[in-house]
Amino acid sequence: MNTQHLKKIAAEKATEEIRPGMVVGLGTGSTVYYALLKIGTLVRAGLDIVGIPTSEGTERIATAQGIPLSTLTAHPTINLTIDGADEADLHLNLIKGGGAALVREKIIANVSQRILIVVDESKCARCLGTTYPLPVEIVQFGWEATQRAVNQLCGHSILRGGDEHPLVTDNGNYILDCDFSPVGGITEPAKVEGALNNIPGVVENGLFVNRADKVIVGAAAGLRYMEKNS
Ligand code: 5RP
Figure 1 (cartoon, rainbow, N blue to C red):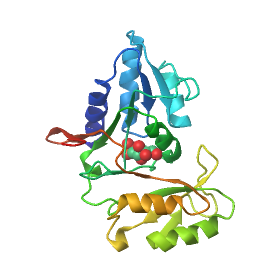
Figure 2: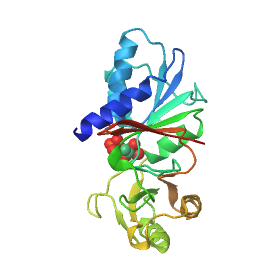
Figure 3: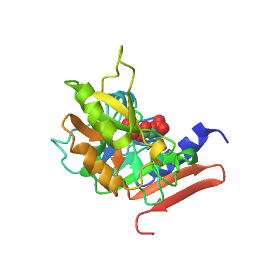
């Protein structure tokens, strides 16, 4: 089975938890893309929901699908969020931000009553940070100084896009991709999440600790589920 199919079955399964009248957080990425297509189909068939997008990219796809969109100003609480991840461990802790949307994704996650994460099986990790670098969003001003301070924690990071053409996020910031693999991964995610966010210049990092309620894994053998407190 190819990876796209695994992403699709996981994403479509998550949409089964959407109920009429819900405010739905719309994540970002190639897996959530399939959820957006499915939600679009449901909306066109009469499902009454509003979505809050986590990125400008998702906003464009959702708009093209005819999904009604709103804001956190109008809807401060979100009933259900469907989002992807770059890595998920057995405790449902995540690395996110591969699609550069981690700041808005974490803001949305923070006000969500229920969070479903959709991944293919390649994203499952015994220890976070062993197969995927941790994205850290930083402000442009003095970014080299911020990078030096971040490197004290992770050892090595690269500016996404490179010095010549750095990637600029929807929020106008840069991203450092931090390689924790030489230090054996991220063994204490909560500690690292807090320590990174304590560095001046860091806006947010892609560690999502104890936030997901359920991870839906598309696997060659079928769907697998990891649930909080199970
Ligand atoms: C974007 C994210 C994405 O959810 C994450 O990168 C997974 O993306 P994909 O489903 O394309 O692998 O965190 O910031």
